[in-house]
Length: 198
Image 1 (cartoon, helix red, strand yellow):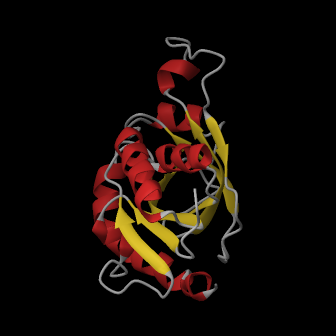
Image 2 (image 1 turned 120 degrees about the vertical axis):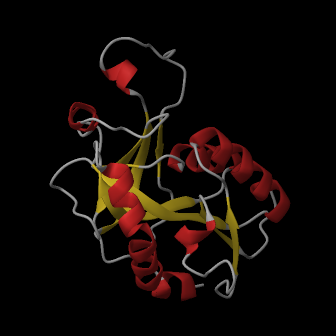
Image 3 (image 1 turned 60 degrees about the horizontal axis):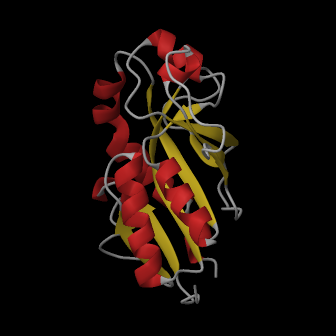
């Protein structure tokens, strides 16, 4: 794949871009990939083929599994892990040759810690589920594995930065609705220097 000299900034849907879709930073192409890992993988693969970017940055909101992160915290993904509660509880099995882990492959500058991010097939709504998944990572996100898998497959450097909008559990949906716009704006503001860098 020939590089285009541009970078690709992705989010699941427009509110997570906090206005960057209307005013893309210089050198960046901004796009959305939809909700869910499968949809995100397909959209990312299409954008990689069309745009041939030098690198990809995924931004968005996530849920915190435990006290390592609080609502409003910002983080970068060191590794993305695709899994499910069915796997962790022994009701499902993946073939050994199936890829389930992808590392970030370029260092995004953000004043926040790096954590492993877990990608289940759907939003976790129980305290027990959050506790089980917390053994694999600190945060939950729905699209990261699709974006990372597409980028790894195409050999394009990829990173992700997230803002915590909720605690994972029974109140997550209401918390996310209350906080996602605010924390998305905070994340985009904090990423200003990284988005301005060549």
